[in-house]
Amino acid sequence: MTQALEAVEIVASIGERGTFRLKFRLDPGSTLPARFLLKTGDLVKFLRAGRRDRVERISKALGSLNMPTFEAFRPLLRDAGLEHLFHQTGQLFVYRTKEGLEHDRFGIELKRATGLRVDLLGAEEIRQLEPSLAPI
Image (cartoon, rainbow, N blue to C red):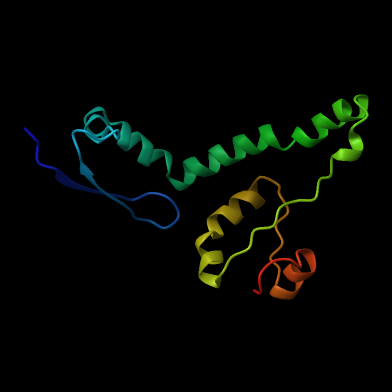
């Protein structure tokens, strides 16, 4: 006998954008333990972990762990004679639209708050860095 699926919508106020909507069907045969999450409160914990203040604290903690990584590897690479293979050049995030950039504004703020340098580049500057990218 097949149990009917129930539609569930959870609306919570979290994160930068204010409102988070999660809509899914509770399928008894699914690998997603939605009923369990709802009963145990783990879903609420998950949603709370996405609050802006919590995400900022987590980001800063991860930053303090990850920022010294490059300097920590240098002596190991030097001792192994492999220092010439390591180049710290940064990352390039390219957005298709201004809306995409705005959508990631909170992520950019988090990077800056952990001490990362973030430069916003125009199409020509991006083309100079990565000429093989499709036209922007």
